Length: 234
Image (cartoon, rainbow, N blue to C red; front, side, top):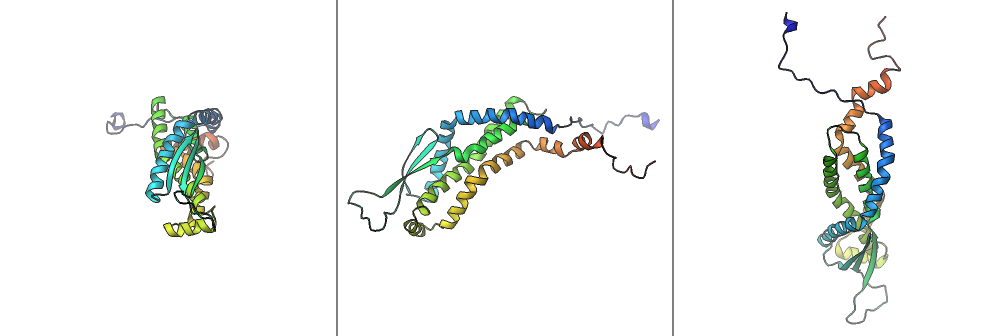
């Protein structure tokens, strides 16, 4: 009789559907090109916001280094004060200024990766509006990382590319050219893709948990091999 009494203290969790990697990869093939197109189409506003954050970071880190900045589509043109070449005297009233062209797209393509993976991830809990909201929030979080790469691009051209005058200028401003070179390599080669993948993993952690769950394991391996604990059974 005890078995007939319902247990009102327990609530059953909804059974989640198995996640198909094949479906996910097919959706990636469809969504990633689309969002790369959107990212490139929005290159001017994306560059505008990124360069504003970059200018703030650069003025905070190296105040007085920038003379002026401007934007041409996805290019951030920075006019920075630089030391004159050895043996070159600057006429009175003139300044030693170099124009540095920063291609902002080289540091923001991880945003297209993030957007593409967000929409390629099957998720029953999130609506289209929620995915758009999370995509926008993810972009705001990625902005400092993109701006950091642009700042390192400027620093590399001022403190490293100029050679000995740049090294002397870096020592005067308390900057290590070695660390600038290392951070530039990381921010241009590793950070764009890695940041997009990490941001996707944070916002789609439910999807990643499904990939590691029992449903996915049973779907892919349970039907073709022995189940755990069945070796001693007859």
